[in-house]
Each structure stands twice: as C-alpha cells, then as structure tokens.
Image (cartoon, rainbow, N blue to C red; front, top):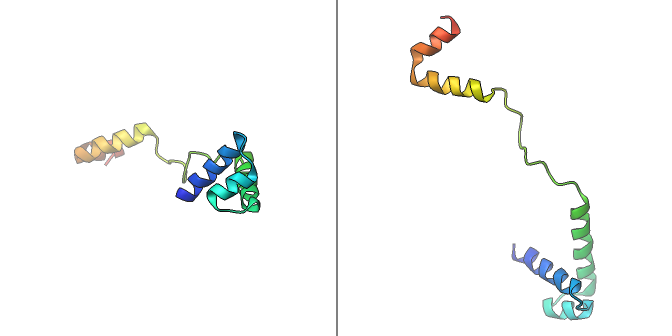
Length: 84
C-alpha cells in the first residue's frame, strides 16, 4: 500500500538524520503520528514472524499422491492395489 510506503520512507528519513518536524512537514503529518508509526514498526519487528505453513498438514504423503495420480490414469491398477 502507498500509505505503508510513505511511512517507511518517513522512518528512513528519521534514520538518516532528518528531524521529526522536517519529516512531519514533508508528509503533512503530526510528530505524534510519526511516533506511532515508529512504535507500530517496532512492535511488528518484535513479534515472531508467521510460519510459511498454512492450513492443515497433509494426510497423504508424496508417494501416495503419486500412486493415486498414476492409478487415476489406469483405473484397473487401482482396483488391483486395493485388492478388489
């Protein structure tokens, strides 16, 4: 989002030596807003990053998935595997 980019840019300016007043004038925000942005950023950094894993773990492993895929191409093979 453009608001997030602006906030990041404002905080980068502070890190490079610009004053709160100068950054506030550039982005047309109060010094209090900039402090809140900085606090929010600090809190986000301190929180553990989310796991890249999403949803439930798979019940079928890759070998079973491959076997099912192969059997879908040959239905007779599936019935032999299952003992039917």
